[in-house]
Image 1: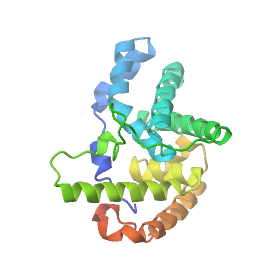
Image 2: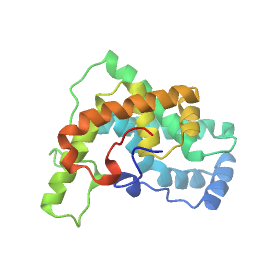
Image 3: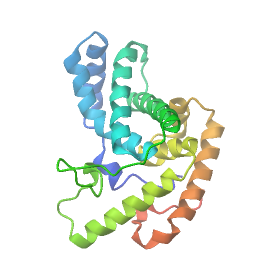
Image 4: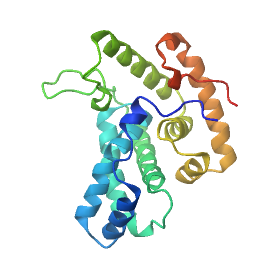
Length: 219
């Protein structure tokens, strides 16, 4: 079974377009209807941005990768042949992230925290904000978010991608294998090893982890 259930961040990123509407929008977008494509963008932009942010660990690069992914998706839309549209989009944004990582390797820079309009550092991405949470809870959420992100960034990119797509975006093994163009066995192996590394890395903040985030032994 899954080591990490959808919760917290994942609940905030559920698809906003009913499946039947989605199929119609995809069909119209394939025939050049920009309004339909823009509705698909609105429905998936947070999910793609979250994926890119988790893989890249940088809000500006994640925004760039998300934009590139949607441009690429529009150009490739006629090649979409059915199946999970979410998995298809996540494959495109993951490839865009790999491109950003290659560029980043050629031009190393100091990563910056996201900035507000007043050039002040933001404590966490906007999609994590819970206006109803107590100050103590907000601090715990921030500490947990930072710990999870730091541990994800410590993984090799290939491990990072598979754990983000499966445990955070809810793809099954086959969808992740399709998205990453890797054999099923490779996905399972990488995911098992990534989960072990994450569990070890997160031991220092285990008391902050909600039950759904706790990494259990692979079953």
